[in-house]
Length: 178
Image 1 (spheres, rainbow, N blue to C red):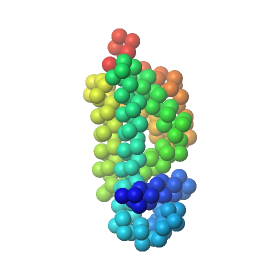
Image 2: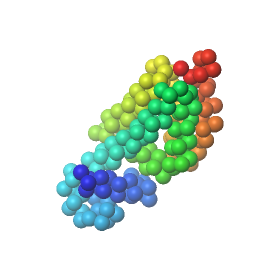
Image 3: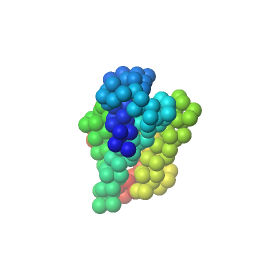
């Protein structure tokens, strides 16, 4: 497992430099400072490696979301928690989100990886739905994914106050997002 993680992190570093298209077993091995055989020992093909790298990104993203939205249980406003998450991702962790979304979007183009992208979006929707109605969670997810896409692909940064304005458009009850 330790070697797989090293290779996944090397894959992320390679994507940060040259995008998903730059990923080859040889290039990953070079960054990880291992033999190309080590990569093929742990991953059957490029899609297997990209699947593992995408899964790692998804888990990291979901952990951030869980931590940010967990504050709703402590009495914090859902919109404010989502807005803080957006700022954390689009301003303070730019390289990570660029890599994560390169992997996420690349999954849409590979039929065998496409279900992983759907699971990623579904899991994030479920995290949001713990704190509001299913319909509002769906709308908030679309807004969240749109902001992150713009950050990852167009270099847009969203500060919490800006993101909160967008989330407020989805609707409030009694001055707070349910």
